[in-house]
Image (cartoon, rainbow, N blue to C red; front, side, top):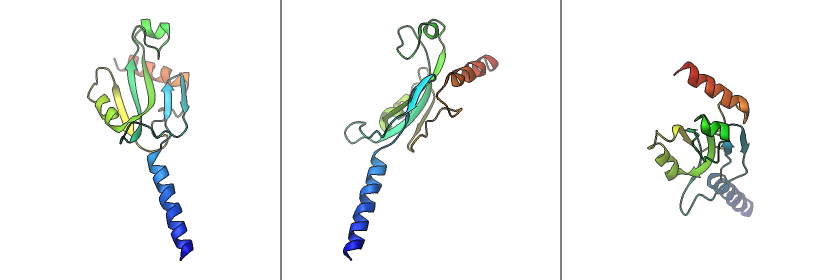
Length: 130
């Protein structure tokens, strides 16, 4: 009987830990990583992974000088509060193709890598579909 209670307590605690933290990709096209568990997205907030496209502008810290002056579009990968992720979707002129998700690694780059090839793929897509 005592063993069952201990097992139940252990399973409950592990379930709670799994639900309350998430691992997401963070960064941009050329410089992103699969970050450690995140669980602090504000008081009472649930953390989610997200990815979206944005256009580089002058003084944009996520872009180099070339990208800034040529208004290059890039992918961003973040962990974020669920409510904030929903608000990104209401600003399509700033945040394109917003995806919010709640499983580990669900905001993985489309090509599966954090590399220059992701940016190249997207710029080729833009030129072909403009």
